[in-house]
Amino acid sequence: MAVIERSDKHLLAQNPAHFVKMTLARRFAHWSGSLCLEDVPDGVRICARRAALDTLGVAVAGAVHSKVRLLGQSIAKIPGNCFAATGQRTDAIAAATINGMAAHLWDYDDNSYTGMIHGSAIILPAVLAVAQETGASDDDALLAFIIGSEVAYCLGEICTHSHFMQGWWATGSCALIGAVAGISRLYALDAEETANALGMAAVNAGIQRAIAGTDTKPYLCGNVAAQAITLTRAAQAGLTGPQDAFEQENGFFALLNRAILLSEHAETLGVRWRLETPGLLFKTSPVCSAVHAIIEETAKLLEEGGKTADDIETAVAEVPELVRASLVFGVPESAQQAQFSLPYCFACAALHGSVRLQDLSLAELNNRKKQDLMQRVTTRNADDLSTPPESVDFPESVRLTITFKDGQTITGFCGEAFGMPNRPLANHDLQNKFNDCLAFAGKTQIAPDLNEFSLVGLADQIFFSLGSNHKNSTQQGDPNETAEQT
Image: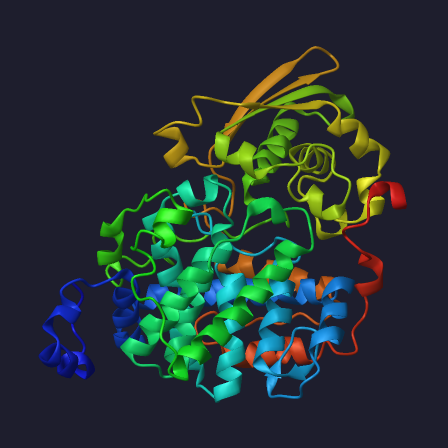
């Protein structure tokens, strides 16, 4: 049982049964309400700042996309003191919606293997919007982001990958819960109110992974961030929620996870910090994390063999079930589908060594060399990579075999791509990626100090100046257009 807060001791005296069973919503609420920034190790604070910097960078790159700008024009109607990545000042709901979509537009944002969650793209936009709305300090914003991240990733571990593999978008489920925990702290909700908000969020969770390859996926990052704000405001207003929403027979785990839960992970909040262990994947290409090992191994095998894309006769990618389930498009018909296409990412890696932001356009999708290379690769499910220990140690691995036109065949295995938790990007790598995103948006490069930059101040600096910047917005067009329409 979690430690009882001083503010709740009167409840215990009045109703001892109230604390006989500490539900997960109450456990999250007590932990998030009692945490102080001084309790967070310095290394974890740096991990949080790394995640925030990366998220702000990819949001800038996303903000110049025509779809994000159109969304901004459509919903940023109410003046306010919250900043949107599109350069508008608006209310918290609109800002969180726009910024969440911008952060996930290119699928370039971070990912946690605790449940397969893009946490930062939802939690940070919600936290920034409420911090601006309430005039919170930067320390308060950083703490709220840490709280939201830890709760989301703890829930992901409790669920295991089962939730994701059943077809649910774990990002929307777990990051909604985390965002509510974080912004409940900014709104100064007490433990009872926070538990109500978390209960409301739990019964609102559940988004199908059918969203992949459409505008809905990035949009829902923003929508979920905004929903976290409205649910928390409802609890602040005194509305009650089912505080046993996770555990009850018609609740979260029963309906969304086949009653699978590793509840012992809840005991480790504040003991093991998931921002640090296992840490986050920071992407080096703007595509699904499941294809990063394939991108890296393709480039590596070509370099080691002294070959080029023109030399490839065939390729066979053997992947675990998690990768097969994530990469749902063969030959993609849109730029967004390309982000979940193993053949397209293989083609880009063979030609460029990576997938670049500029590769996510219909012109590149229709490139004849890429079209030809896509036809040369075959994907196979590998049973040995889909079962423990390999599926646990290397959930998004690949065993790649390339046969060249001269008859030579080479095979390689990549368990974890560069940027994954056990092969992390250095701080200067993250700063370079951040500046590449700024350059893509036509902005001047800057060098934030990861030890002390202000989350709120940096977002204000890089977002608010984008209002008149349309450098790439017309170049990117509509990512949902099919190749046949061009």
